[in-house]
Length: 228
Ligand SMILES: [Mg+2]
View 1 (cartoon, protein in one colour):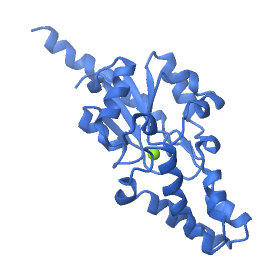
View 2 (spheres, rainbow, N blue to C red; view 1 turned 90 degrees about the vertical axis):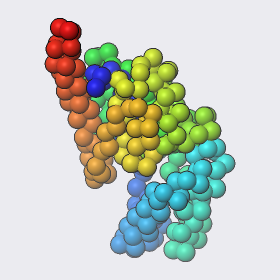
View 3 (cartoon, rainbow, N blue to C red; view 1 turned 90 degrees about the horizontal axis):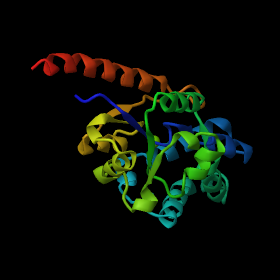
View 4 (cartoon, helix red, strand yellow; view 1 turned 180 degrees about the vertical axis):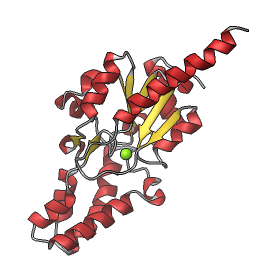
């Protein structure tokens, strides 16, 4: 295996976490247990293979229509709340996990190029810039711009090309085996993060360990081969 030289990250639930939709429902007068249940159901429905195959992130129009259909499940509790949920869930209002900035900074200092590959309906560039992460990201590959969604291998290949690295030298980091797991078909290694509580450290420092380990392994492998 080649030593890892570059890292691609997913956006949602990998580097950034969403606003708390359940809290929005509570503010609107829904009883907390019900709000939690409704929100959990919406989020679970959004992540099913069927839902993810509908082309939600192929355009801003699709994004709005399909998310509004999901959020409308909450309208039986508060009529019209779906509109407010949609507005609140824009990437502009997502928050970086506390370890996102330090890990991106350390990758940058080690000379490891970083890209973002996201199924998203709007540009993430201003979102990363606002939180001081943009300076560490060399390439964005966004589904609505490419008119292709993860797990399409072309997206990961495009990111590698932009970073000028081979797929075999690149690690994809994400949270979805369906979407981010598609990088395997493009020849990348993939690291999928287990869930953590909202706002807790995401466990991204593991990425630094994986890179370090792969480089040490690469050196060990190189020595017997180089003697031939
Ligand atoms: Mg994700």
